[in-house]
Length: 105
Image 1 (cartoon, rainbow, N blue to C red):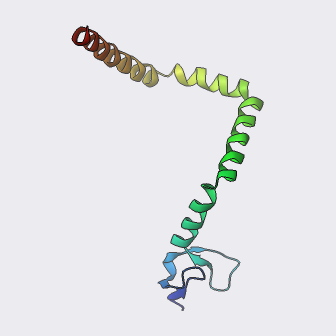
Image 2 (image 1 turned 90 degrees about the vertical axis):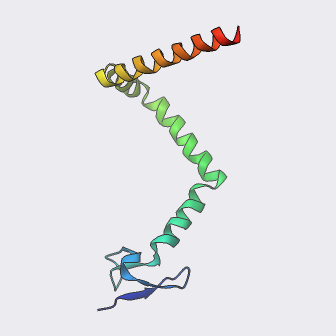
Image 3 (image 1 turned 60 degrees about the horizontal axis):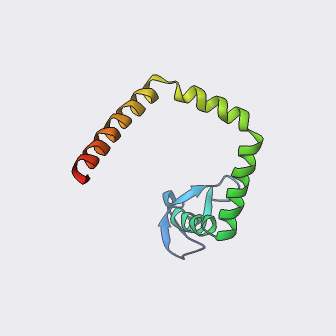
């Protein structure tokens, strides 16, 4: 059985575990190593046109699903752990603001 394979992108000879599984290929692995695939994905998803396309999709999703999102947020904000976290945050925030006003004024 083949234990090593050459990456089609970087040309390095790597162990098979360094490649994603691909049941359509002869050896059952992708032609590019995991690191090259991740680099390519990072470069793609950080292109300005892709970022803008994702933002626009998210805006449209928010418009289409406003009721669903509002219902979820109402339910989420009623959870005891969320209420406790918010209460703790507000207590610390007020304390810090009080100290800031006392020291600054």
